Image 1 (cartoon, rainbow, N blue to C red):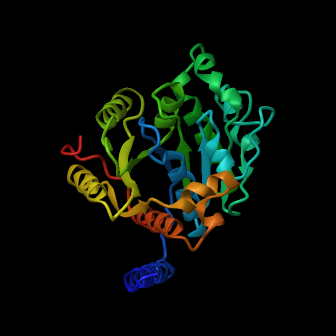
Image 2: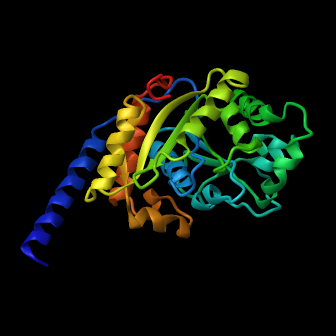
Image 3: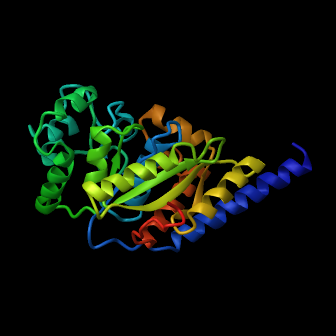
Length: 299
């Protein structure tokens, strides 16, 4: 390695140490009322599920009781949290059809004792069709979740809902059940592609089904500080959404990408990695924030 390479490595290590020390000295407040947050972006490949499980894991490590509801038929969030989601397992599919309640479907995760999951199974792939004929089809998840939170012996501080990258009845159920929407945006070409449509759909949900829904948080993901493109995208997002965009950004990280293949979050896979630190910083910032409506400029 050259002297320049050694200097960069040393600078990187010093920065990691500084950020970890800052996190250790920060106490995250716990909300008195459960914050129900849907993580959504209709554009695929933005780190939606990765963000869901790693933020949930980070908040659990900062003292919160957290529930992840996997509403994506692919079941990637369930896999990353190490919970069983074979077809015969009681899952969110059974909850949506009214055959089971959330208490029967909830599982502890292998990630952290404060983190729980309602898994998805392959059965969920056909749920869109089955829901069409049901009464209050858009309200199924909210009704089940409100009942569970009211009766649960554990007070959950956060509920994260991971939904599919499309607007169907599953995603509508996620929006109706939530009080907040968190949008991950990747720092790459076409980062804002589809965002206007997503915000328009959220406005429709606000108008017709859930007036309390708010876009509270935007998280920049896949950030590479070495490229002008990433910096330009970050600046553009912050210009359009100054109050919603977190200061913390999630970098491109091999550790973040590898963790799901081991059925783990990045915190379980490599707690000292820069990706784990970034999600802890984002979680701490979310804990400090209240849910504010999307500004008219952002819309």
